[in-house]
Length: 357
Image 1 (cartoon, rainbow, N blue to C red):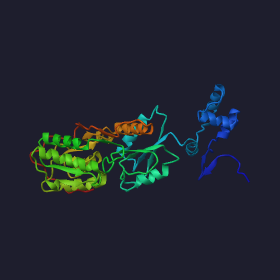
Image 2: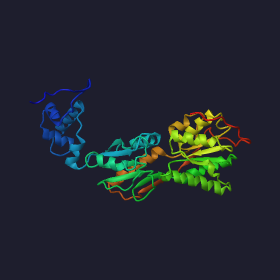
Image 3: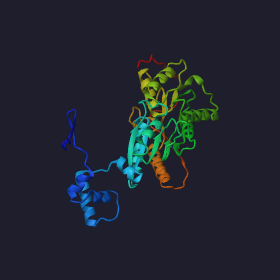
C-alpha cells in the first residue's frame, strides 16, 4: 500500500517532504523531461517555458539531488572544505573561502571529520572517502595529518602537518613570523623569553620554534631550555605549560606563544598567579584570530592572513579543476600586529603565587 504524501514527522518536529521534479512539472504544466532540460541548461525548450519552469522552481524551493546530478553529469559544482574541527583558525579560513566562491558557479560544503580535538590521524582520508564521487568535485583540507590522497579529484591542503610535500598547498611564512615576534620582544629589552610551542607533529609549530631560536641566536642571547615547552596549540594544555613556566624560580619576563589560543591562556594564568600583563609579563601570540583583539589586554600577535589563505586555497582548487597551469604552492607573508600585551622588560620580576586552575 502506497503511503499518502504529506509531511514526515520525527519526534514531534514536522519536516516537509522533498520537492521532486515531478512536482515542478505538474505545477508548471509541462513534462518531467522539460523540467530536466531546464534544470540542466539543455537546449530544446522555448524561452517562455524556461522562465515559467524557473519561476515554479523558485516558488516550490526545488533543488536537484547532488547524488542524482553527479550520476548524470559526473559533477556536482560543490567544493568541500574539510576541517578536523570548527575552531577559530578554521573558521577564519572558511570565511575567506566563502567570500571567494561568489560568482564562480560553485557552492561550498563545510565538513568536520575529526574526533573533536584535531588529533585523529587519517581523518581526511575517511572524510574524502565519504564525500568523493557523488557530493563534491574537489576539496580544500585544513591542516591535514596525511597529504597522500588517492581520490579521483583535486585536493588542496592548507597548512599541512608535514609541510608541502607534493600536494597543492597554501600556507604562511611561519618561520619569518616567529623571527618577527621574538625580535619585537628583544627590542623591548627582554632576554628571558619563554616559548610555548605547538604540537610536535606540526610543521608550522616546528618552524615557529625554529624562528624563535634563530632570532635569539642572531641577537647573541642564549636560549634557556627550561623556558621552551610544548603547549599543543590548545587552551587547556597551554595553561598547564604557562603555569609551569611562571612557577620557575627564574621565570620568563616575556612569552612567545605558538598561537593566539595559547597566548590568551597564558594571559589568564598570569592573572591568576598575581602577575599583570604587560607590566610584569609580556605575551605575544601568533595567528591574529578575532579573539586576540577582544581579550584584556588586547593581544600583540603575528598575523597570518587567514581569510586570504582560505580564499587562495579555494582559487587554487578551482584553477586546478579548470586545468589552469600555475604554481601549486602559495606561501603568504606574516606581519606584526602591536597591541597592548607587551611592554619593556621589568628590572626585577615580581614573585608569583601558586597557580590554581
